[in-house]
Amino acid sequence: MNLIEKYKPKRLADLVIPNDKIRFYLEDMADGLVINNLLLTGTQGSQKTTVAKLLPELIEGYSPFVNVVRGETDLNIQKALIPLHNLVNFGGISSQKYQYVLFEELDKVKSHLALFWQLMDEWGGKVILIATANSYMAIDKSVRSRFKILEMDPLKPEHFLDRAQTILHGEGIQLCDDYVLSELQNREALADIRKYMDVVCDIERNHLRGRIARSEYTNKPKLTLITNPVIEPENA
Image (cartoon, rainbow, N blue to C red):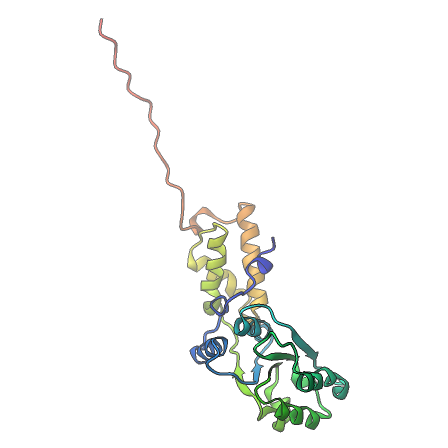
């Protein structure tokens, strides 16, 4: 199985979140201590969509139904809001604690946003809206004010090192931190978790092909010196 799929985050602990305040807030939401509409902002590859998709599962304890709206410049928001109206009017799926809406790339939507925030006000505590955006300031101020804003930090190689080593160790590959870090630093300029995962996949493949120097491993096999046994002469 591909490592990206095999090690897809299933818990918050699987995510690389260097900002403790953000991590603590997500933990509190997952445990039901606080419930809010959430706007995740930050550069590409900062795990916004991963968090947005994972959080409803953690809140519910299983994979619930999530209404997904994808933001586009020419999005007909009135049409997109029809299933959201239905959530409010008909109560959604009764087996769920909450109803969920994932609004991807909210910053791309430029028109009819008044309808959107008015509907958000009607939801009360029935619906949790989780939105993602690359540009926080591109979102209408009235919409922004109705969210808890979490800005996901760009990920540095040092942030991803522990996760990379966890994955490699899970595959039985024991490499020095310095080696793995140096490989991750080749993609540092992109600060994209997807690119860091590509590096981990490259390392695994190079390991399987025997392309990594033995000196880069922490579990170097010990050499056992084999000598010719001394044969005692038989007694006459």
